[in-house]
Image 1 (cartoon, helix red, strand yellow):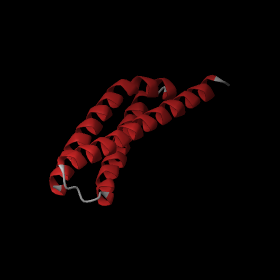
Image 2 (tube, helix red, strand yellow):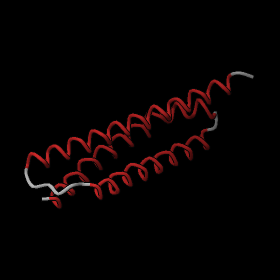
Image 3 (tube, rainbow, N blue to C red):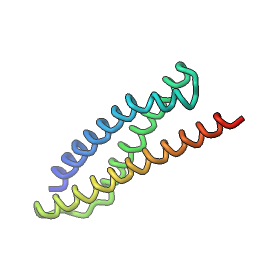
Length: 113
């Protein structure tokens, strides 16, 4: 049963990670451009943030599988998938707010001479 759960977990979380990554990549470029005032640098920074985001989150998903207990019932599978996916979504939210905070602080530094 663990193999089925691993596959479901990787598929579910990869879908969430990719969707959130693409959304933040396309919508966040405006904020990075405002902070950096350089379209070329903005594109490179935005792409680097996306790659780092994917690596951190997909790495977390794969590493977290190592700590799973043996799952023997559908209830245990649903519980484990819910807890792990929820934790990942909280992690994504935390990373997003950290980036927003960092960009805001950078904007304030650039606006004050």
